[in-house]
Amino acid sequence: MGIMDVDKIDLDQQICVIGAGIVGLTTALKLADLGHRVVVVESGTAQPDKDIQRLNEAIHDCDEHADPGMTRTRAVGGTLHQWKIDLGRGGKAGRFLRFEEEDFHCGQDEAGMSWPISLNELLPFYVEAHKVLGLGAIIQEEKVEAFEDLLEEKSIQLESGRFSVVDYRDVMKEILKKIEDSEHITLLDGLTVISLSKKKGALRTLGFRKNCSGERFEADCTKLILAAGAIENSRLL
Image (cartoon, rainbow, N blue to C red; front, side, top):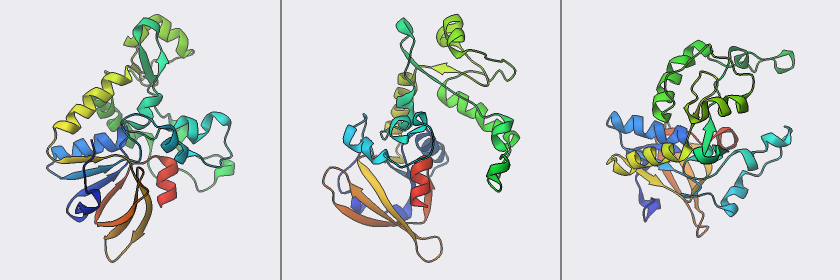
């Protein structure tokens, strides 16, 4: 995972995906299936690292449970590493929480902040996401009052439109195997994007920092996908 001479890769001839979380990895696989060559850049490494995780520290006005230093994992797999609900003999699992209609509408104190898309536009992609993550069919009308009660009742077989449980290690293993087997995908880890600037036309210059050495370099690209998560996407933009 990762290759030598990363600063010599011609990103202008490939699609550059920033972030190797579940969104970045599945996006890369989809593009590779369509015949595109893709470079995925990840700040973290295969397993979470405390020093790299410190890059998530931020000043925020949310409650402590929303602290990105705790809720976002900077590693290959991203927040899949947060899917660690203890199921006892059932192993570790995670919760797949789907958006609801009310999530797409702003309140009176959030004027102008409504989403540019609707839930109906997003629903078809949930079907594909469930397939990718091995969550089974979406049961839209099942209502869940207490997640823990359903865990006890259905254990790891739980499937619904609002909640689903899957062993994150199985998801990681399957996706990473597809990435490693693909001839169209290069995964670079330990490489943080520190700047993004636009040149003429669609050309953009990305600034990189190698976490292991601190060395910095730049590379140009024309096709860029930001999949680094809310805090990183916002910072770069």
